[in-house]
Image 1: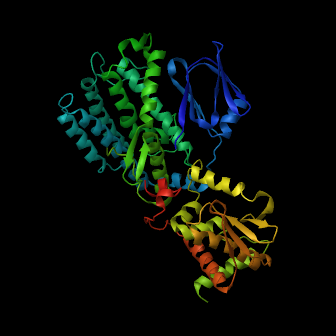
Image 2: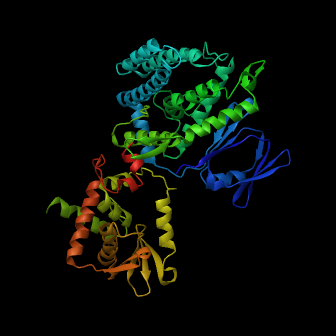
Amino acid sequence: MPKDNHHVFADGELSRNEGTLRIDTLDGETKYLPVESIDTLYLHGQIDFNTRALGLLNDHGVPVHVFGWNDYYRGTYLPKREQVSGNTVVEQVRAYDDHDRRLEIAHDIIAASIHNMRANVQYYDGRKEDFESAVDRLENQYARVENTTNVEELRGVEATARKIYYRCFDRILRDPFELTKREYNPPTNEANALVSFLNSMVYTTCVSAIRKTALDPTIGYVHEPGERRFTLSLDIADVFKPILADRVLFRLVNRQQIGIDDFEQELDGCLLTEDGRLAVLEAYEETLDRTVEHPRLNRKVSYKTLVRTDVYSLKKHVLTGEPYRPTERWW
Amino acid sequence: MSDGEDVLKQYLAAERDPHREPRVRITGLMVQYYHVCKRELWFMSRGLDIDRETTNIQRGTHVDENSYDDRRRSYQINGRIQLDLLDSGDVMEVKVSSTLEKPARMQLLYYLWYLDEILDIQKDGVLAYPKERKRETVELDSDARTEVEITIRGIINTVERDTPPELKKKPYCDACLYQDICWV
C-alpha cells in the first residue's frame, strides 16, 4: 500500500518532536506530521530545519524534495540507503558500459515514451480535433526506434517525436493557453510553466521510486551520466511524463480548474502563483493515486506503484537479463 | 563420487572448520524459500529487494514476537541460524499459518540437522501455529536427514545459477513479496 506524499507550502520551521515531525509556520500555526505515514516530503516554502529533523526522516526512509524561489526544483535530501547491493550497482554499470545492452534498454525506454505520447494524442483524436497525421508521424518515430544503432541517434528520434507531440498541445489546450514552442529556463508562457512544473514533479516521483531499490540514480541509459541531475530519474521520467504530467495539464486547463490568472509574468518568465501551484499539485497527487487493473499482477495498482514496478522491472533486467517492460499505457 | 555428494561434503567441511566459510551460507529462510519457490530463493540470494513495508511481513514478525514470550530464548548461531529454544530444550519455530507446512518443517529440520552435524547437539523440534492453536513435534530421523541433505544440494545449485529459475504461476504468487519483481 503506497503512502501519500506530503507538501508543505508555508514558510517556517521543521523540527523533530519526539517521534514525529512538527512544523511551526511563520503565521504562528503548529502542525504535526506523523512521519510513518509520509512517502515523500515536499518543501515548497522557506523552511528551516536541522539534523535532528533529518535524522527522523532518515530513520523512516522519507526523501525530501526541496523547491526554492518560485518553486524551481532545488534538490533532494535522500535518506541513508536501506537497500544496498554492490551486486546491483555492478550489474547496472555493466549494462551501461556494454553498447548493445545499453542500447537495448534505451530502445525500450524511448519506445515506451513515444507510445505514451501517441496514446495521449490518440485520445484527443476526433474528440477535439483531427490528429491523424500526428498519430501517424509518432507511429513512424516509434518504428524508427528499433532501427537506431546508437544512443545519440535514438535521442534524435525522441526529440523529433517530442516536437510532433508538443505541437499538438496548442490544439488540445483550451484557449487562451498555447504551446507554440516548448521553452524552459525560464518558461515563457503559461502552458510552458505548467509543463515545466509538472515535469519536475514527475522527476521527483521517479527519484523517490529509485531510492526504494538499490539502483544507483546517477547511471542512466538514455541520458548521459554527465548531466546535472540523476540521469536514471530522467530516463524513467520520459516514460511517465505523458501519463502523469501531460494528462493532468490537459485536464486542468480544459476543465478550467486553472486559468490565466493563476500565473504571474515576471521579468524573467512566466510562473505559477501559489494558488496555481496548489491546484496543480492537488490534481497531480490525485493522478498518482488513480488505479488501473494490471494485466500481469492480477490486481489494481496506482499510477504511483507503476513507477515503482517500472524501476523493479529495470532492476530485474540488469540482474537477470529477463525483459525490461517499461510502462506502455494499455488502458 | 557424484557431484551432489561433493557439494554436500564441501559444505560440511567448510561449516565444521572455524576458519573457513562455505561458498553459500545457508540460512533457515533460504531452506524455507527453497521449498516455497526456487525463484524467490535466487532473487533473495542476489539481494533483489522487496517492499519491507508490506503488512504480511509485519504480521509475521508480530506473531513471532508476541507469542509464548516468556518460555523461549533466541539464539543466533554462526550468523546464519537463528532459533528459539524452549525451556523443555526443544527448538521451536513459530509460523502465522500452516498452509505452507512443508517449507516450515524443512526449515526446522535444517536447524536440527545443523545443530547435530556441525555442533554435535541433539535436539527435537516443535512447529507452532499460535493463531491456529496448533503444534506438532518434529524429529530428525534418517529420512528427514536425507531430505535436508537433498535440500542443501538443491539450494547450492539454485543459488549458483547465473539466471533465476523460470517464471511459473503458483497458487500463492498473489501473496508473495516478490510478485512485483517476478511479473512486471
